[in-house]
Image (cartoon, rainbow, N blue to C red):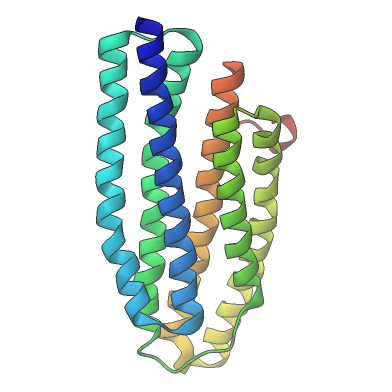
Length: 222
């Protein structure tokens, strides 16, 4: 009976993490939509939604503590609860970056419109895809997929360097673009950090499945 009860709680914990991950993914998508369409109202909505994400983090934390205190999980179950306890704040911080992008949108929308930066869209698309697949890998406990996703972060890093160079050049050549270009630099950095956070999730997936810590390992050793 006790094992059946703990399984119910652990399944509920998985569901809540997946829901939180969906909220974080939605926040990134909506923030980027607000940027691309210069939609200040949508940016404000992203910032407002962050309160719900913060509350979800607290609830998952409480569930994790209760499971450990009441059922004293061992081996795989304990690793799962620990992984969830670590992934939850990662998802919350990831959503914070979406909120920071939304704040940048509010500033950029008060400035003359700049040209589009395709590489930034590539960054956003890859970051969201990594997040979606990273959560799938965690729920499915697929360590091989998690390792593949970690390596995909190189694509975001490459795009970030290109966007950074273009925006710095724009500021140097046309100082009137400084405010908007600087905010877009922040946006690019937020997207780059989102990729890093997804790597953290994938590293925890490997820990969950294999009881192996690969954090700080070289990419070719992952």
